[in-house]
Image (cartoon, rainbow, N blue to C red; front, side, top):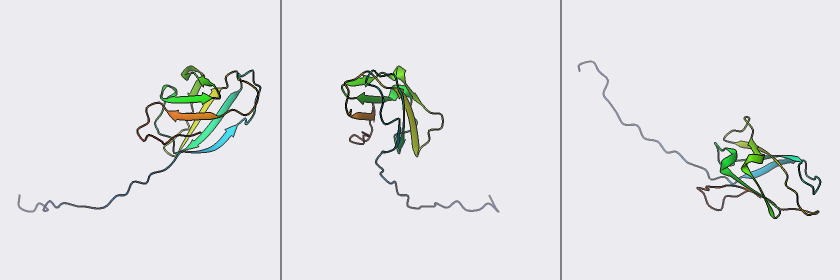
Length: 111
């Protein structure tokens, strides 16, 4: 049409940055070996959006069931808050492993 602006292509560069999930806080940091304490973990750069069914939590020799896990509504692309009830375990220091069940970036785990 006469008077219409010409259509022009626009190109630009965009860079994706790879980030590694990082634990920001754990509360409480200790509890009874009998289990049942509610633990809240704040993780920067955990895959998002995420539901309780998308997350694996290993707690010592136990696995935290998805039904005992919740994802805070305050979670975002930059920070995810998970809360779960600790399972019964042996006394002592326990390794906690948190990772997405379907990890698109294998090796990007939080422990």
